[in-house]
Length: 309
Image (cartoon, rainbow, N blue to C red):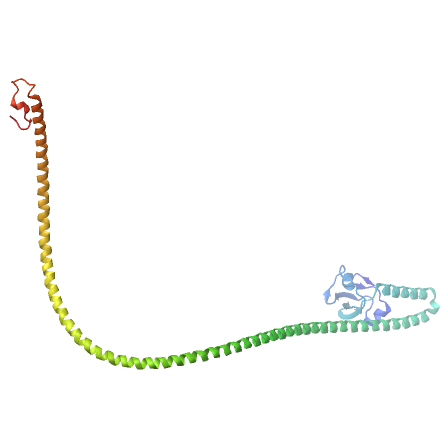
């Protein structure tokens, strides 16, 4: 039992197992500093019976550690009730206090042995739990590794099947390629024989071409001489053409001058024709009016105004 952080009373089983005394002050619970407000909550922890708790207590000027096993609330209440009964018996029957102390000692030893056994069982269970957790973790890792290996094997098997299929396809392609190459080689052999014959024919053609080339060279020389003669005649024709062009340009200038003169004469001719037409009209008018006019009519009245008397 506690009074703040100080141990106010110790049950026999606890005292024997943990070497705790009344007046010890709890300073740490599971290496965590504690205070009056938090000590009860830290001691209870997750309130799982059988789990261990490590106490750091100060006794005088020194500190020591003690490991306790959490007990169920019902077991703690029973031990507290038995301890209270023995205490009441000693107070009510002082004559048998020695026997009561002996019974308390025996009971404490039994409880301590049971507590020790429970602690050992709890420690074994915790160790087994830790080892089991580690084994389960290793087993899980092994299973995951096995699954990865199975996936790798499955992938490798699928890749092997794919490679086998590709190899079969490559084999088919090689067979087909060999057949095609054999056919192409046969065709090329035929082509080579034809090419050999063509080469022989070409050699004969080259010989004939050389002879023909010599003949063509003589003809080409004659054509070159004739070409030079044609060039000379073409030069003469070109000079004559240039002279004719100059003369033609001169004649074109004279033609334009003559056309301008013809146009001017045509204008004057049209003016004369207009004058003649007016004169004819005036003459006709005079002929119409002569029988009806008196003898005093003058000849100038019948003439055009621009001709005068």
